[in-house]
Length: 247
Image (tube, rainbow, N blue to C red):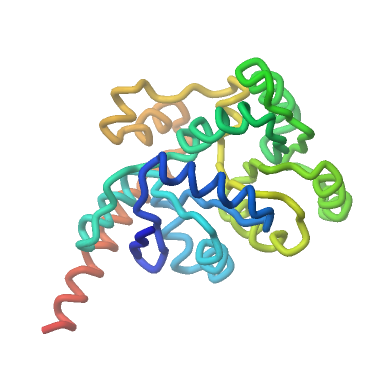
């Protein structure tokens, strides 16, 4: 599996089917590995946040979540052929788990969202066992009990939607104490599963404009949207600087 480095963060240059196969293999190994889905904002934050940077480096699978990461890789001369948004990854993975009667735990989002997501997932995947859920607003002192509950339920997959960088750091810090197959940090995916937010139309997703749709739907995200051009500028500066050093 080829990995490319985009501004210090490793990204797996894989197809969706390859990513799914790798995730299924990791689940079988039961070593609490985890998946990250870096976008422009995450890559830029990792450059100044050592804890996030270490968490990204520790991932068993690092997927190109957005068009910004793909464009930055192209600028740096090591293109990634396929974008794999976190929601596409999990929607490709869950049918395999459904056929096997897999066990899933949902972690994150606002109170009530994970429970609604669980109901809708059960409707879509009747054989999938949603063994439990927990919103992202629990107190720090509740952490040991949460870990014990997840371990007692023994899921093959924990979907972690705590937002970045919290979710990536959480997975890295808990990999040694959890007894699960795989964790996947998937941002706002539980909101999508619960029907709380809508996804961009297919044509916008294919054009790499999902970020624009989300910004239009939630104007408060404008400060996050500007990270995409900032990432491209950083990649261009890195490419020019590298050429200058080579010369």
